[in-house]
Length: 252
Ligand code: 13P
Image (cartoon, rainbow, N blue to C red; front, side, top):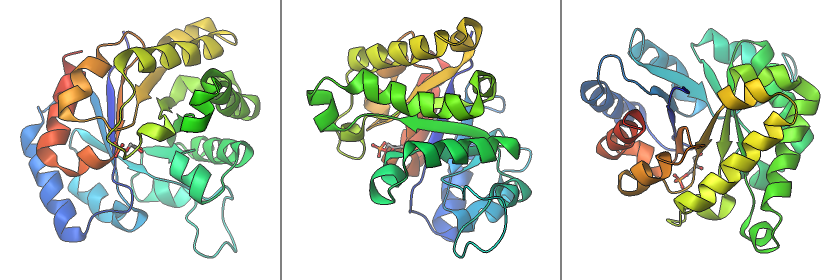
């Protein structure tokens, strides 16, 4: 039985005041010991304050990115030991916005995954195809390539302590979500790619879906056998929406 996992990726949104309000509402609305694991990933500058707000709560903290180097002259970057130092448990790597806008390729994503995990962070590895790739029937090949780049560097055992997020690029922030059946197909494929290296790890690894998940569609998507929760963008900024999504994951 895989424990459901729901993370909110706030992307570049929020303010100290908005964050405090959102967290207060989430803490009020969540059960003391939620069945699902719940994570929020704010921008870097808010991590420390949120780690104090979330101390001893049922919500864990994650970062949205990391530097692939461990320390030194890398102006503007934030390294894994700093994320750990301010109370992060999770780390998103390979988000499609990082891949597309900041030109992060598979090998850089793999290095970020590796360095984050070596510093005790649990990576949330995002994979997913563009609309063009889907239309050319390349979805399975793309997600396998993105995943294998990480497994080649970090080794299959690394997935015993990581989450995979399938985020079709065409569904992110567009209001168009993959249908439950489309999500299930790709999730099953991802699990088979992992199983080709280690069946036990494949059965245990959590694969979550991201891309226009809302309270209205979460239950249906999460009910698919290989979907273990969600990575939520826009809807994670609204307490009532995010709480309903968390509830949908718990009842799965
Ligand atoms: P939306 O839920 O806003 O589509 O974003 C998904 C996402 O990119 C989460 O990382």
